[in-house]
Length: 97
Image (cartoon, rainbow, N blue to C red; front, side):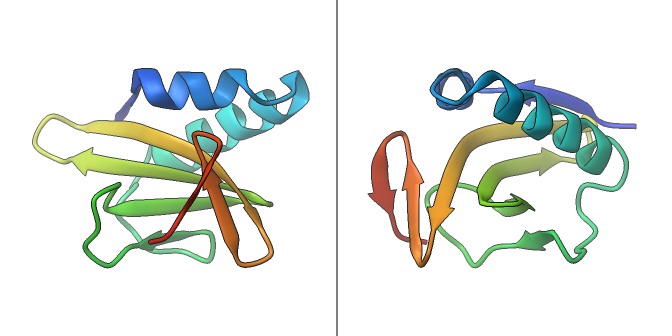
């Protein structure tokens, strides 16, 4: 079982969303990432090397970016973004992976 940790940036990203969106995202994070966060699924994939994170979790139009430290059993949520069409907005700015 993995422990979920949020960075200050991820918390700021969540605070910018509506309450029901935050509840939905946090529920999905707890459901999807507590057990086997490094197994690729339909909504979870490993990203190509980039500066943001190693993994992405898709929750509707939202994207949760995270890294995993298997030795410590920790999932670190780095950012939460919104995907609109082919644009990804993180921290209020467009981001390219």
